Length: 322
Ligand SMILES: NC(=O)c1ccc[n+]([C@@H]2O[C@H](COP(=O)([O-])OP(=O)(O)OC[C@H]3O[C@@H](n4cnc5c(N)ncnc54)[C@H](O)[C@@H]3O)[C@@H](O)[C@H]2O)c1
Image (cartoon, rainbow, N blue to C red; front, side, top):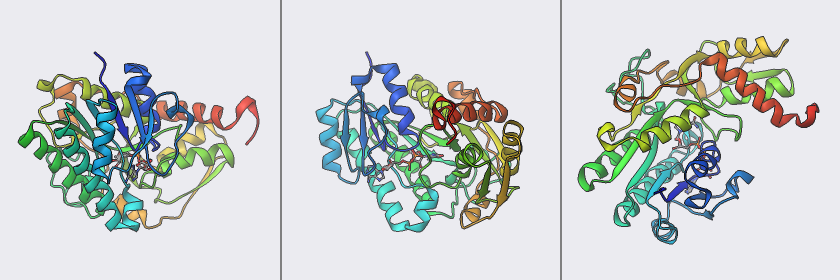
C-alpha cells in the first residue's frame, strides 16, 4: 500500500522537486505539500496543499490527523547563509520545527520520518578530504549547530521511542526547477542563470573553493532509496554521509565555458567564503553505499550538460532570448 506522505517546506529548492517525484511514485492524492510563506510553483498544485508553520505543534498534529499521514519528509528550515544573518531564528525554525515534527509524529501513528542533515554539520575539526562518517562535528555556523543537534534528536527519537527516522547529510544541491534558498553553495546554481542570461557571472566564493555537490535527480534518488530500504539496511539514525562529486568554483566555470563559448566568471568572495572554508572538500559515503546501496548517476560533466539543457529550455521558451 502506498504511504500517506506529508512534505514540509514544499516550496523550497528540494520540496519543489521532491513533491512531484513522490506523487509520481505514490499517487498525487497520497502526497500532501505543506508550504509556509512562499506560495511555491504550479507543480505543487496538482495534489493536496496546505499552509503549515512547523513552529506550531498543534498545527502539525492537525495536518497529520486530517490527511491520515504515516510518513513525513521534514524539509522546512533556514539554510546556512540565511541562518548566519539571524542565528536566533535559525535555531527556532530548525530545532523547534524538528522537535514538533518528531513529537507530533511519534504521538500520532507516523511510522517514518525523513530529515535532511547537511555537510554543514562538519566544521574545522573534520578532515577536509574524504571526511569520514564519524568525523568530529564541530560546526562554526548556527545552521551547522542545528544540524548536529538535529541528528542527535533524530537518533534519540529512534532509540527512546522506536520512531523510524532516516537522515542524510546532503552535499550542496544543484537543481534547475527552484532557485536555492540562502545556502553557501547557491553559486553553483546561480552560475547557470548567469551563463544563459548574460554570458557572465560574479561568484561569491573564491575560484579555488572546493565543496561536495550533487545534482537534484541524485538527491531525490537517495532520499527515496533510504526511505524505501528495509529497516535492517538502515541501522544508522544519525545522518549518513552522502556524496556524488566535488569541484571548485573554477572547475564548474571551465566546464560551463565548454558549452557556453565566451562565458566569463569573476570572483568576489563575501561572508559565505568563511562558511565554505569551514566545510570539507569531499566526504566519504562508504556506509551509505554499503548499507543501502547508494550510488550516484551524475558526474560533473553529466550534471552540467543536463542542467544547462533543462534551464535553457525553461528560460528561453520557443528559442527566444531572455
Ligand atoms: N539545498 C541544499 O543544497 C541543501 C543541502 C544540504 C541540506 N539541505 C537541507 O534540506 C532541507 C530543505 O532545503 P531546501 O534547499 O529545500 O531549503 P529552502 O530554503 O529552499 O526551503 C525551505 C522551505 O522551508 C520553509 N520554511 C521556513 N520556515 C518555516 C516554518 N516555520 N514552517 C514551515 N516551513 C518553513 C520555507 O518557506 C522554504 O520554502 C533543509 O533542512 C536543508 O538544511 C539542503
